[in-house]
Length: 509
Image (cartoon, rainbow, N blue to C red; front, side):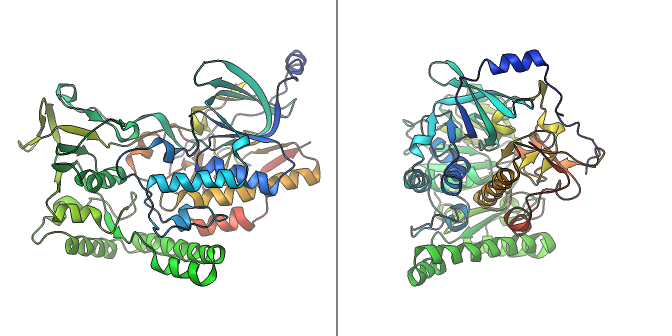
């Protein structure tokens, strides 16, 4: 745990001249809630607002040409969820397909069906990128500057609440670490986040650099057409096969109908996720042995399991990769793919030379080396003229920031389905809005009672992409409501059924 002390952006009186200047802009469009991002979080927020607060004005701004967020952006072969869709899907919308582990196009269709069912098409404004937002206490509103992604034209609008649903990674670029000599490689070099539609890998030797969820998804998908696929990893990752089809969930839907069956399957799978995570954390040695046993059964006889599938850390210190129906192991067993654990010395025109002296030939290189993380969609914020530095704030209930009024942000769990947190957050936000309406409040601002409260990273997880960005993200405290719940059950009590008021949440008319 760190001992640094955040200095929250505090509200300060706005000079009369500034108030007068702001009043001159009252002809700009004003919304009760502005949602930034039309991905899984933004669509969920839009549905909750449309159904639970039909009288409230809101819009969803999306910087890209289509909704769906990650599932519209990622087009690499085999792209899929690594969580079951009964928990990764929304609580309010049953998942009706047979597959529980779904491919990207299926998830995108599900999200866009949600948009149509709740009339959100008219709420989403495409190619609108938020480039700055400034809060005024005197006016009790945010002023938001928006840039059109095509023309560069800037417009301004205001809102009572800003809902940041932009996720936590950059859409414009992925993470590629320094790879010595990569510029010498004569063939295509591709990052999965920007997969070229015209890339033909058929009958070619493909080298995938990386070992995380994206790499283990790519390997079996590419192996269907490639001459051979090699996954080159510096460190192994825990990998477990899961059934692509959840037969008990399918049976529940057939017996009880889509809505009740989905709800029961969701509860069952939430409990299963939490039980697996808790077992791995409490009994890491036993979990290691079980995972190794499962891997060894799926791999060819005599395969060096410990060399390529035994990480130096405990299960769930980093995310455990799921492979549907063991497709990764099948590709290795069939000889269509292989895994190499080594370090890169340098790339050559026709492949890579490893630290061990071995050389790997390749026609295509895929750098599945991770994501670039950013806070709040990279939007610069100001509160009464003072810049907000996210890393100097503390997250309140994991959904608001200390010293920042009328702002909520959506962020999921590192070890469970992202959407579980989104549903809870949206429900809590709706209850908070209703409470403020009843009491005539317009401003809501969390502030720690103890400014010297010890803090630590908001996402206290060992994954490389989070460690690289720890200095950019908000912090969490050492006690509720500033300690971010580690799992769904605790969050369900805090956000789902717990009170919306708190001594450290300050309201003003």
